[in-house]
Image: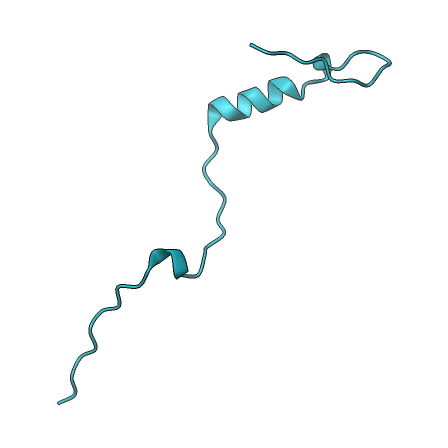
Length: 53
């Protein structure tokens, strides 16, 4: 009967990376949309009005 190989316990940093999108984070999404909304741009100049909370 053949012997069973021991389970590998490799370094997780060296494993092949899986590229899957992270779940959305509501707070960050709201912050991004509030910063990129059209109301934050100055009319005619095209500069972003900086809003620091």
